[in-house]
Length: 101
Image (cartoon, rainbow, N blue to C red; front, side, top):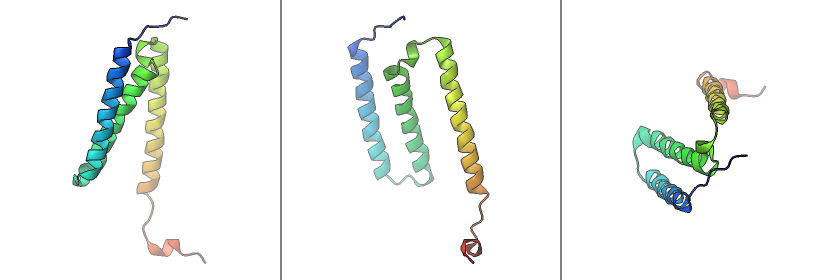
C-alpha cells in the first residue's frame, strides 16, 4: 500500500479554508439575496465538500480507479436529485387532493 505524505501545513490550510467557508455560510444566511440564496448556499457547500473529499479523504492522491468510483457516486446523486425534482414538480397543489374520504 502506497501512502502519500501530506504536510501538516496543508491540513491546517484546508482547515482554515473550511472555517472561512463556515463563516461565509453564516454570512450568506444572514443576507437576503432573493432567489440566489440557494445558489450561494449550494456553492459554498460544494466547495466545502470538495475540500473534505480531496484532502481529508485523500482522493487527490489516489489512483484513477478511485476517481471513477467518486464520479459514479456523483452521477448517482444527480440521478437521485433528478427523481426527487421530477416528483416535486409533477405534484398537484390542489387542496381537493389532500382530503381524506
